[in-house]
Image 1 (cartoon, rainbow, N blue to C red):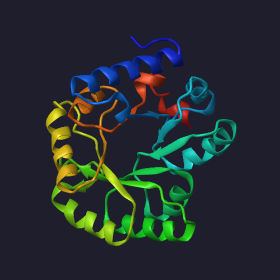
Image 2 (image 1 turned 90 degrees about the vertical axis):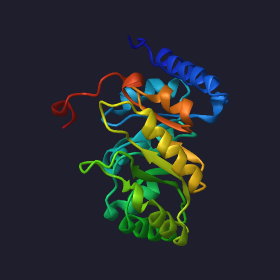
Image 3 (image 1 turned 180 degrees about the vertical axis):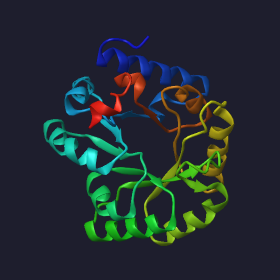
Image 4 (image 1 turned 180 degrees about the horizontal axis):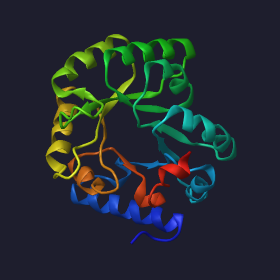
Length: 228
């Protein structure tokens, strides 16, 4: 059962993160909670901001641009993460708006982001999204292509901070999280963006440094017809 206030939901998730981190002999503060506010309007987000939370994730550039500039004026210190797929032609907007981009997954996007960063002077953290389950319908760089994409990103001086993944649905996520953690060690990147509402505790025990929590903080997303 989800607690009935934003503060209670936030406290409950932070307590669960802390317990999982402690089990893994990690410090709870080594894990960043990204509140996934996609499809939720400013009025739904404000209670979490009022509770003191400042790190949020959005899936779409256009949706984020419609609500976050005003919220940032109202609440200082917000860090905004793009966790959804990014079209190369939206690179300039994404670099201007976000503090981290989790979905770098192909050479053309590396090129577009590098140019956008050069033009703007802003350097959001970039994470390579890995298609950890080799799923044809899912975004992300194939595991086999990761070394080449990382080499390209580094050559372009993209600020690569780490890796991100979304494991296949309906199966035990731990092996996929463990594979991403191994890849991060092999390629000397620090941040691991993995774990969502249903599996974040497992992700934390395996090394997640960023967890992306939506439903457990906001409740179920509005139906599609209500999002129009």
